[in-house]
Length: 131
Image (cartoon, rainbow, N blue to C red; front, side, top):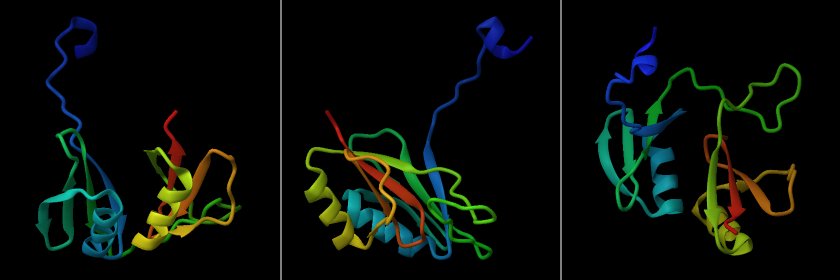
């Protein structure tokens, strides 16, 4: 029987999502520009950004063997393992801001109310209208 079955689940707190990159500081700087979040931790090869008002942050880890994902991935391409969804009020303005911060707009856009972008390390992220 697991701890969940007995109601004795240990205290678990979601802290952050971690993105690997060839340069953690460079990718963290992009997300700092994009989101306007403050730096919580800044160490060689490791940076954490703090979400305003608390909650889970976003962390970045230098990975020497990092392989840039391809989106959308085809057969044999390095696939993304996750992506970030970011709610926005104005899709065009948010997309322009993301590009100014250093993102590129992905060629393939599967939905009209979502804009897929690639961060400088190639991780896809989606801007979507928060209706």
